[in-house]
Length: 155
Ligand SMILES: Nc1ncnc2c1ncn2[C@@H]1O[C@H](COP(=O)(O)OP(=O)(O)OP(=O)(O)O)[C@@H](O)[C@H]1O
Ligand SMILES: [Mg+2]
Image (cartoon, rainbow, N blue to C red; front, side, top):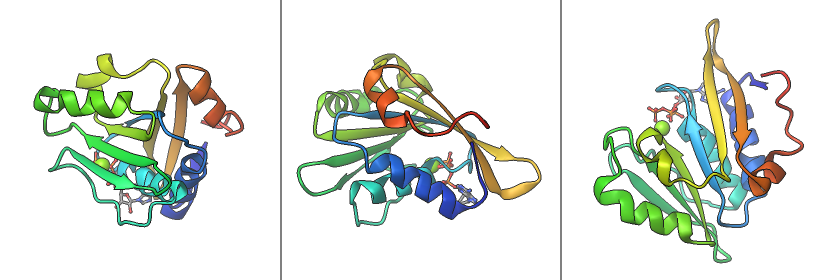
């Protein structure tokens, strides 16, 4: 599908975020500036998180409390390359049923991510700096159910 503005991207993220109950994993694929962190801001809003979401580019991970026992842990492995010292923390979030794990630049940790995850790809659009194309794959039933009525046919 296509969004034509940042607001539409935030709304898309929020719709997905509102469906999350903990234990879900989202891998975000896309170039620098494609909107991975922006999508995550929307997702957080949909989860009921009121804190400002900041890119984990330098901290590698950031954690947010959604209340009612649900948390978001947001990773960005761009600068780290391989998970290394973060591997244990990542494994902990993945195993925690009260955590939603979102990962940017996951190539080097893809092997430890569960198959049942949402892989969401964001692409820049050549002639419109505010538009993005969003496509996705789901690796199992839980993630498929979350994305099921989203329209990916125009991707
Ligand atoms: N439709 C849109 N969706 C998402 N971002 C948009 C859109 N239109 C414009 N933007 C702008 O594009 C930028 C996207 O930056 P963002 O940090 O979300 O990208 P990123 O994919 O996380 O990049 P990085 O790989 O550096 O972490 C923001 O400045 C945002 O305001
Ligand atoms: Mg980012």
